[in-house]
Image (cartoon, rainbow, N blue to C red; front, side, top):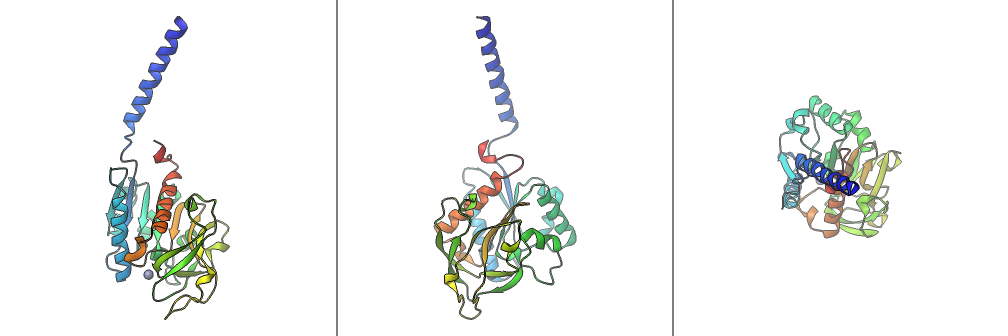
Length: 264
Ligand code: ZN
């Protein structure tokens, strides 16, 4: 009898401790995301950003997470970023030294980054070695024009981002960027999806004739995914591609060093 009473008391104590910790950490919204975009860049890149905001805002229905948006790159500072477990870069990169430093600190302290298209653009004028290393070392080399659909190949089918994807799919119109050297040559980089050589020569005005062209990749030293999609409003018109975007989004959050928010 005494033993039973102790067991019951222990159970009650356990339940109340559980209830207390559940109270301390509200379940919804599970986390906050901050998306940056620049409304004054190339028109197609602004169109993409506006579509992306609509798309990801749509995923917040039911208050599962908070999706905040800013067009002010000065928000890239420690004080602002501390509330967010993921930042999205829709069409720009930080330019000012203090913004770059804040971004680097954020990433080195376990922050999440989901970058699209021109958010990885860099050339000999960019002058940001840390960022080049973060991206896997690829400098912008060339692109196709006009933007076109392309056949993509899943290179790393065992990666969470590729879960459920077919081995190949046709992605909607995009301006595809090729990088030199290919990020695939970097040992820290996992290339998850790339452009199929079946596309070559790709383009009508500007042609990509050949070569490796990674499209989706991650740097294993950070909680980040880069996707090359992001040229105009057509980026969210394909269910397979949207499915992949959500895989990227979920994986970045699942890897949060503060805990997988979908499990609480
Ligand atoms: Zn573009």
